Image (cartoon, rainbow, N blue to C red; front, side, top):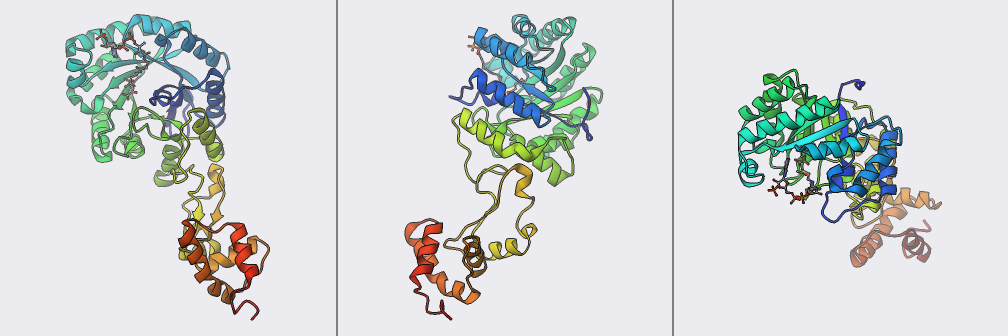
Length: 382
Ligand SMILES: CC(=O)SCCNC(=O)CCNC(=O)[C@H](O)C(C)(C)COP(=O)(O)OP(=O)(O)OC[C@H]1O[C@@H](n2cnc3c(N)ncnc32)[C@H](O)[C@@H]1OP(=O)(O)O
Ligand SMILES: O=C(O)CCC(=O)C(=O)O
């Protein structure tokens, strides 16, 4: 697979972990549309489903495989030969083979031991490689696992021709500093094997942890649109991409202009509407009400916007409300075709605040026209 400028590859798992959000179901048509959109903006890999789930899921994955996307499709599998056979039957060329790797899950979830994990890894990975598949080995609960055991597993993966190791912070319990240290240690111990990071948002650190993993040397990173996913979700595609670009100066080669459109589509398809304040794609993250902020943005948007809203398909809104100042008010009236003087604006401010306070909302265009026409401000005619 061709590498982007910085060699970072986004593997988006909206169609797999995203759909695992409790209660979420995508139709086949929606999955196809989401896959096309993600492919269209340059996402290089899509984790697209779980063939072991049954014929309907397989039918959907076959349909995705038939689209001829540029993105590589990868499926999720337990470390079981029938799961991998089901993936082969769907026509994909890449699989994630998952094994629980923490002692907690080995003992209390799959109820085996480390020896079984190593043996099952050899069986499943051997089968997948014999069938010519590209393989990421998913270390479920890797963040709680013994690092030396992970190094041992990575050695086995490498020796059997596995293509990468997925380090999963399955419970979302890491902080970015620990994430960095763990990935760095694994990179140093097994530099020949690529690492993929899969982070959950239980403590609100999924995006930070994904970026920490990349900075520590992971080349693949999992995301989901809007941060959908198990429990509190996964690292959000839009946050990881913009974070990499703006905070780290790493361009993962994604066209961000359709982020808002894709976010809305996935919000509707998942029936999980996006909160207006959602980082990067929320409808209102470029709305300015506070007097000093509005004044700053009017003078130069760079004063209060880290990036141009158009970069993610959004637009800027000036809002007149309880915290407004006169500059914002003058500008809003200008947008309504009314030339308000600074003095008039200062005079109207008391009414603006009173209305916002009473109605617990910003003033609508109608409210603004009404108070202007009412002419209650003695300076209006001045
Ligand atoms: C962290 C993650 O998100 S991993 C992805 C998880 N995704 C999903 O579970 C969604 C789709 N899942 C499914 O449709 C079903 O759970 C299936 C088809 C995978 C399995 O269904 P079932 O056979 O009915 O089993 P069930 O759902 O109860 O799963 C539990 C079994 O899987 C085993 N198992 C769990 N993980 C693994 C693994 N990585 N490798 C091998 N076996 C595993 C458990 O040990 C347990 O087996 P046991 O009954 O012998 O103890
Ligand atoms: O690939 C795996 O092992 C599981 C990935 C996952 O969804 C998780 O650990 O949260």
